[in-house]
Length: 356
Image 1 (cartoon, rainbow, N blue to C red):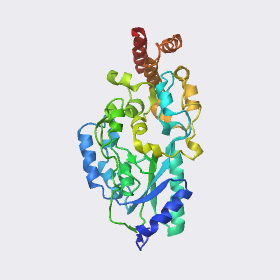
Image 2: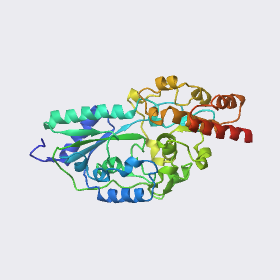
Image 3: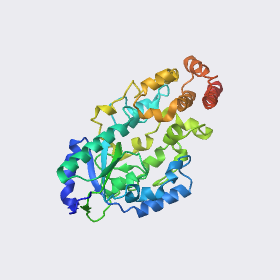
Image 4: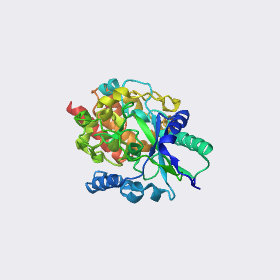
């Protein structure tokens, strides 16, 4: 049941941040839930077809735009962020060495959804203990929600030209989660954080495939994260060379962002790189059997690509790698793979090396 007396956001916010810090969050805020303008932008994005094969983005748009529709009774959304980048091989060094595979830094350790969910529940339980019981639902990219807009409304940052949430003290290398609850909080007057992107276009220039088609507009169909994680089937030939050695996701727009000079390293051991995946040799990865892949990616976000998608991605990276007998031998070993998509990408990679 919701509390009968509305709490004051200005008074509660410092206490909430302290509870969030104890639960492992870098910052926590109380979001106002007015998302009408964001819903209009979402509709425009979908209308342009920028979502590609992400059909789920076109479903339940009303629930995305209205927290109370997603979870009836919701009066307040608490938004939290947590640093997700661990120590490991420097990204620029891995990207420069085409014999190694690059994995987006958030995906090197345990699947962040699990870690984030556990900590959000701990925060919600602390809030119940301090403020009295209330009903809630924890979200970790697990239901239709405009999480970046809610985080902005919670004053955790502004949405940058690369469409990611940016924070003045932490850049963008963090993950977000929410607590939808029926806790009655009298909000402060809505005020978005100041947008500090200014005239900078570093993220737009840095995108290898030109996916940031205009400031604040991302065409997912061109995005390497989409192509290597979400897309099933063949990667369009026009993007394969630009993918380089990125085999799961891409961080280029973040690496180029000046605000990420302030990015904070994750302190949670769950985010530590596993199995040497912060700079692995492509030839070794391509030799993994499905059983080895399942074992070495257990509990990791890498599972989202599926084994066939993993081999497809590594085949593209090997096609972009320096030619060597070792690389050609690895590709030929998969030339008769039962998966047609894998065979197609292996053939493309071998043709690249013949042309060299």
